[in-house]
Image (spheres, one colour):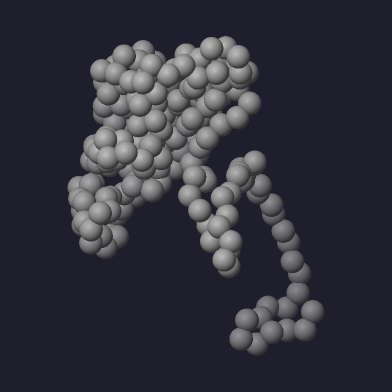
Length: 213
């Protein structure tokens, strides 16, 4: 990464962190508006789509040559709560300390969104035309079920994802060390909720005094 790319990515990430998008309630609109203006200044034509005004999603496309399926980049800008947590630095200050940016969402996943935006902006500035379109979806409401984000888009705006076969999302992009081996994960599925109800009959007990059978 060049120093200019690092500077751009750092600035975008710090700005994203400064928006308090704690979910619930989310309130991602101001953060999405920042991204919208950022992309418009670079010559993109983003689209904002939302089920509610305060919980929008942003879609933007870098046109390709039409010789390959579109590649989807997607990430969310809502974050989990910080209530009653002991932070060394304020969670929405985006303070830079010892070369690291501190703040809620720096890793999950405003850091990922900042990288995707930086990559897309650099491609635009270089007048690069990819083999297929690159679609960026910046989502709301990931941390509390996705009803207003990914679920809403998939159910009501399937045309956005037409012909998409591959996507880059939240997980991956960094090495995991297993012994002396460097491992890069490729996620092929996502966990889902599966509710089960079980009934057990027998005498009561305690882990400190197990009962046979």
